[in-house]
Amino acid sequence: MKTLGMAGVAAALVAVALAAGSPTGAFAASSGSAPDTIGLVDPTQGLWHLRNEAGGERSFYYGNPGDVPLVGDWDCDGIDTPGMYRQSDGYVYLRNSNTAGVADRRFFLGNPQDIPIAGDFDGDGCDTVSVYRATEGKVYIVNRLGDDGRGLGAADISYYFGNPADVPFAGDFDGDGDDTIGLHRASTGFVYLRNSHAPGVADVEFFFGDPGDRFVAADWTGDGTDTPGLFRPSDRSFYLRHANTEGVADEVIRWGAGGWLPVAGRFGLPDGLPVPPPGGSVVFTAAGDIGATSQTRRVLSAIGGADADFHLALGDLSYDETSSAQAWCSMVEGEVGAGHPFELLVGNHEDDDRVDGFIRDFTDCLPDRMGSSGDYGVEYVFDTGPVRVIMIAPNLRVDGVGYDYTTGARRDWLLARIDEAEVAGRWTVVGMHENCVTAGVKSCAVGESMIDDIIAHGADLILQGHEHNYQRSHQLRCVDVGVTSRGCIVDTDGDFAAGAGAVLAITGWVGRSGYDVDPADPEAGYFAVLGGPNTPSFGAGFLTVVASDGSLTGTWTSVDGTATDSFTIRR
Image (cartoon, rainbow, N blue to C red; front, side, top):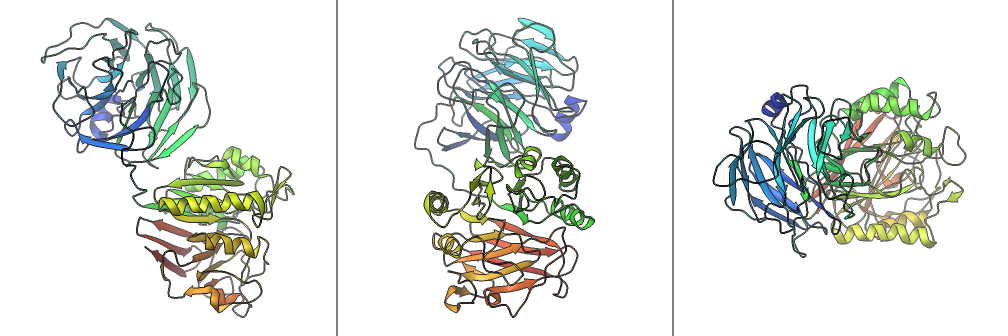
């Protein structure tokens, strides 16, 4: 397994490394068997966090703040362990166990500010440390380790490869047992791989990643070939690709903190390590019925400024107000930011009737960025921190398949996903496009029994669009269509106890004209807040949800108005 220290994404790589303090770990594997796993290092403390295949974590201190982390098999025992490169003096410090302690080897390598690259460059089963000299765009390969603070002498192999601002990493990209050098060009997002230690153009090149990503490579599948991965500080997630080709990530793992540096390898950690509970705070926004009007742009711009981890788009996307799905996606990214996770769900305007396009065209240009499982855009689930999000398509038809969750296998699937979240201690958020109870203009399309099932199995928050207004319920234990059943209402004060029921939030007022709400509607009694164009101070807007281990708080923001609403569910 190999790691390097990445030093930024600007033209002057070394200067960025010093100014931004953002070296990145990259590494790879040398033989097929168990897959490599990920790790993160907090460079402000020298605190390492390594994971086993089950997600169990071991943490320990090693190195000084500002050191560049590496991992490798320094003693040829098949286990990857920590190393540190101190750019201020060019010294390497290697340890032969994944525990806190002093270095087992210490030696001088290269020039201060060189970028370290670790790997098995001669195929002998032992990892060594080499360097990339950014000022020259040159690789210096050393096939031995030093000791006792001495230098290593001249490199065994040296050659030019890439441009000075490229970020180097090492891996066995063709599965032949020898690690070679790859480069990530952050300015373009291209990856360049060489399969030999000789100057020349890349043997393989493809696009992967965004500027600011911290690049890694490892054997993610255990097949003996190293492929790319990256850690994205902006959303604190690993994106792992299983082939050396262009494409989206095959795995997404949300973990860590934005300032941490990635490493990976075969760490030899035991089974049974504690799996950290879903922790930290997650912020997301939610709204559907979007369009592409000037009102749309105002609301999307506000969503982009909300500093959220992702957005849930609750169906009815473009309303055919752009020339194509791609044009609509580009409009969205222009407002919320390129690469921001904007998770799509089919509405009745994008199902098989194709009133305003087809969901598959939209998911092509705004792909899943949260590592979901299932059928993204239609029926899928993902976990992030303390939250599980389940997105479903009741009463809609996609690719000839009708989605009904009131009975049968789809009901079983939905309730099993909710039950899993309850066992794991996560907040459960269920999103869909169409409604059931409402004080607007729509009727119950998704099934009263489905809503009752979702609540009974422990969902905390139900999100819907379709109605072009904002409606937020009291905490409910059930719903009855056509009437407000007081026995279904658990609590009305906006500060709710977790596990007692669910809150329903209808948030479908982004770019379209709003629908009036009717306080005299037979179902209006379920709702604490009714906000439509006939409600003073309400205008188009969105819901922001902040979830931590102990609470989930929702806040409505009227972008074209002054009205707000908030509620909290507490454990």
